[in-house]
Structures are given as structure tokens and as C-alpha cells.
Amino acid sequence: MLEMLRIFKYHPPDHLTAGEFRQGIIVCDKDIMTHILLHLLERLEDLKMRAYLARFLVKIEVSSEVEGDNDIVQLYQQVS
Image (tube, rainbow, N blue to C red; front, side, top):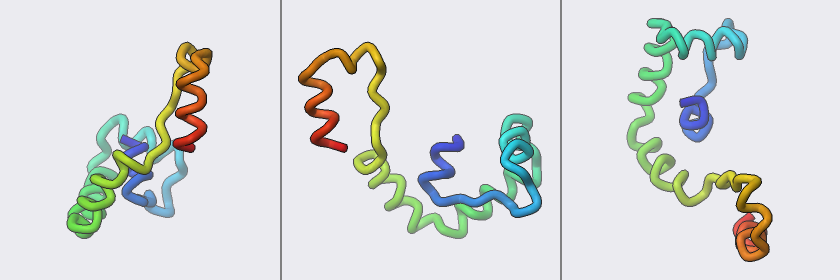
């Protein structure tokens, strides 16, 4: 969920620390969830395009098991 919020350029309320924000998401704090939903719904049309493009523009993580394959390493370097 935090990665999705990063893609959508969501910024938590200023009065919360990063730890408090994460904890609020875990326990579904009403104020934090309301703030997130308000952000998403106010920018719905722009975020639809951002969500679509994120599939193609977000860097993928390559596991350490696959990094040993030279073909995969070359393809990943071309994409990066």
C-alpha cells in the first residue's frame, strides 16, 4: 500500500511522523484512511492515468536467484 501511495504522490499529514503514519495504516486509523481517500478521490482522473502508466514505468525488483543469469542481467541493464 505504501508503494501505491508513493506512485500516487501522496504525502501524509505534516503532524505525523513516518512511523506514526505506517502504524496508522496498519491499524486502519480513521483519520489517516479518510485523508488518503480524500486525496485519491479528489484526483481520481489524474490518478487513473498514473496507475496505468506505473505498470510500465516503475522499476522492477530482480531477485538474487535470477541475477546470476547473464541474459537476465543484460535485459535488466537495458531496461534500467
